[in-house]
Image: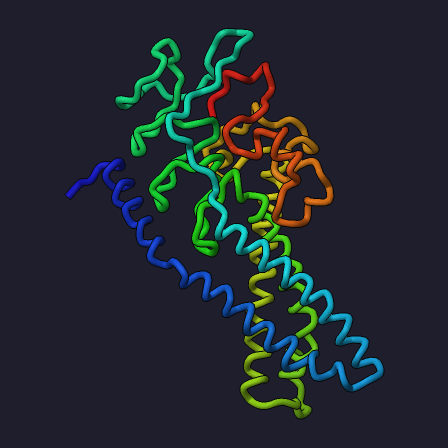
Length: 307
């Protein structure tokens, strides 16, 4: 039987709701990988060497100190993404009025779907599923079943949407995950090479198997996360999101691209002391509305551009 593209797309997105069922399973999986790595690096290989003295003790300190520091930052960033709401549309939200021009900030849809709006503005965006107006750069998440401010994507690893209010935390999670998995891979490399040597390898079968598994997992995560990190660095530098880049609305000119420095500050804030931690300075939160996800500065000559 022939099915139209619209029906097929609708059927595909129906299965997005199955992602909700993963829930805590993905969190437990992440914690499981952390646990295997911790057991292999700390308890099996470098922890006992702390008491051997000499070069072994110095090597253990050189590995374990940054390992625990990066692990703490990784978990802090991870749970900040998991438990921080990415941003939802406030009830009865309406576009801001440009007092100088006497116009409502232009949006992109003309179908109001029953929502009462200013009929003189023919570019107000409306979410037909939520039946409400959509702020700039807001998109509907088929998994969460709601509109998310400056939505980037729905991430199964954090069981949450990545949006305006937790995007920085997600980037820091990628950053610290890459550093931690790289450190774990390098620190376990000698033990991994020893598996293929003819000499006897000290340790029980379970500890050796855990070390081998931890090396393979961390190498795989380091390589995959590096790709995601590079991609998101390019997105931040252009002040765009994964969805906006996919929709090809950032080429050749993008109204929100204000230069790499300002683009970076719109995600990480202006206070350098807070750049590497999943938090914002109170002053930034007060004076930077873009950190709240409802209003974004743009280039005046491109204000009519769709988004």
